[in-house]
Image (cartoon, rainbow, N blue to C red; front, side):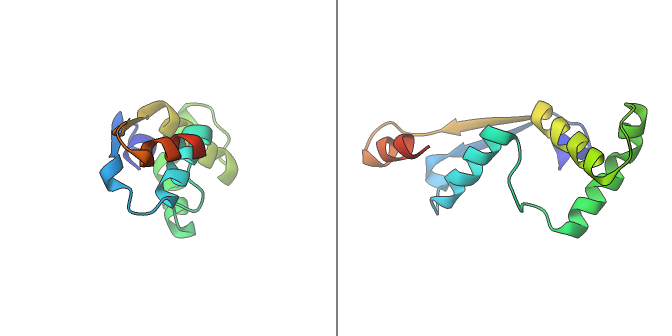
Length: 101
């Protein structure tokens, strides 16, 4: 939210001890691949995020349709969010995860 709506540089630090479910890695993979995590926000949160960036999007010359505003938000996140992955190379878990993703 900070990197998209407030246009702030943000670091997301994620290490292997935080992997409670392997599905977390699917979300990280999606974030690295496309810049977004599907179904991360509820519809009312998405509407609120669109409204929070409307004036910045207008100033940038972006059309004010819901899809264009959402794309503007995602592009801001892509440029401001920096992902740092910290994984221990020791053990079988790392090798398995590298092969999966």
